[in-house]
Image (cartoon, rainbow, N blue to C red):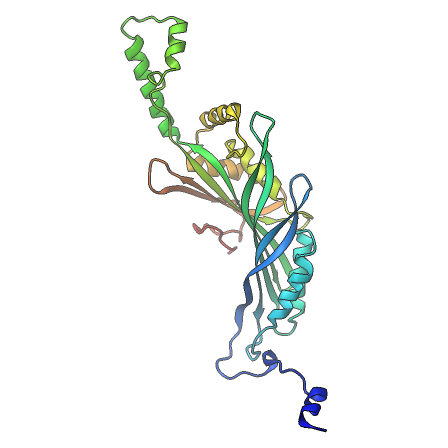
Length: 325
């Protein structure tokens, strides 16, 4: 028998990960992969199945300081076989992180899965019968720690905010213009005032508005069977009342202007509205909210942050999406 024949029948491919290593021995918090592209299926608010591409991070910890490393191919194959074939839901995510941990039994007891996507959904116009596509960046994070699994959902919802101070100053200028126009006579007939209010002189100032973003992170109740993305978007937009629009006709734009005037908001007001709204949702065991008003008056943003206030829950942290304490 030749040397090559013997190797073909006896020799196994080397597995470097199982070999002892020289150098510092240390436990590692997380080892794995990031930026994995995986097509996934989701259900939108109308229970329609849609497909999109997710950027995924997959990790396990390394508890054995003598182990050279983990088997990254096991993480990838689990993602490929499960995440890309089924509808994204808590049970599926729980199953995947459990498999991550089981496939590394003896050297790992924690697992982490993060999926970053953009959620697309058709949303109705304010007045007209039109609908249009709107997108909401979001991520779902599933962690497995010594057998306990947690699902956290983070998303961004855009809206419009009109400054109450600017609105008051604009009203004062309009009052001043009215006094200058009609104060000399002391009287004015309805038709004349009506026509004057429709001129640029009549409405001589307008309050400044800005596109704003609510960043919301929630910890999901373990009883949930679906990801409540569409419902949380509805709750945020219902609390703020000034959702950014997709398909817009003149009647929609006029209603948008009315809603902005009826819902004047500093960032503090927006944060308190959202806190009060999400506190009513008993499927959210914790939440963290950051509202960002991209000022049109200033070159910087106005920001307010609020949490649910759960003991041991999300920290009072100014970073965009903080982890639990």
